[in-house]
Length: 220
Ligand SMILES: Nc1ncnc2c1ncn2[C@@H]1O[C@H](COP(=O)(O)OP(=O)(O)O)[C@@H](O)[C@H]1O
Ligand SMILES: Nc1ccn([C@@H]2O[C@H](COP(=O)(O)O)[C@@H](O)[C@H]2O)c(=O)n1
Image 1 (spheres, helix red, strand yellow):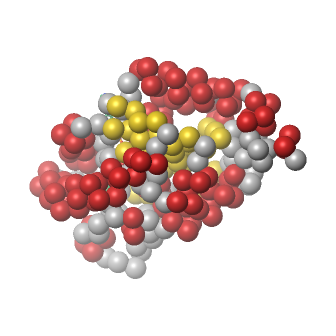
Image 2 (tube, rainbow, N blue to C red):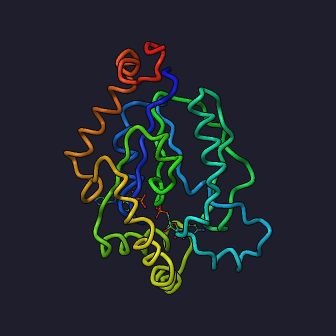
Image 3 (cartoon, rainbow, N blue to C red):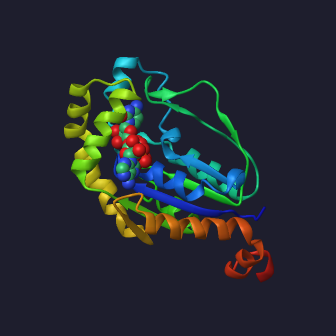
């Protein structure tokens, strides 16, 4: 594999289609891709009761453990494995056991604030922002949170109006200015096909990577 990996950041509002885009652009390259959902880097809140954890603002940048994400991403880019935390949305906390993640040719860092942090942005080779209308996103979110994340309708609506929407406007939408590409309507087939080709090229041609990177082995 190539070191450092080619790193793609995928940001966008809740329900925009980030995970779907990440899945579609990597589905033909097997294990050459590692996905780092930044949800896994929500602060460890084991010291709080479940009820207190449920009322945290999870859309504010302060909800994330950025130092850990920065450290683990750089470790991965140095070619070493990491013990990535794994998040459980039903208990609003990390699961007990982390997951061992090995370095791969392509790494995808995905989450609402994937383009927020300056240091993380510098580690990204390609910055994507998935843009989908707010009404579509909230409808998707209601469906997902109720079916998959053990929430009730009233709670999803309250959370959306009190934190999700205002934080989107304050932090997530403005992070779009860091994007190299904006993908309208999420998984649109033209964008997905182009990005899929890019991912396959990164997995398939180590030599080209070295040409492209000033800091790559051939530049030394
Ligand atoms: N382009 C699309 N067309 C229709 N449904 C989509 C599209 N993209 C995503 N979805 C659906 O919307 C929901 C949220 O998508 P997801 O990729 O999980 O969003 P995010 O990761 O941005 O929160 C999922 O149920 C997914 O299947
Ligand atoms: N305990 C938590 C943690 C996060 N959230 C919400 O998840 C959203 C981000 O995930 P997406 O897949 O939608 O991008 C974010 O908007 C948080 O509000 C939560 O509800 N509970």
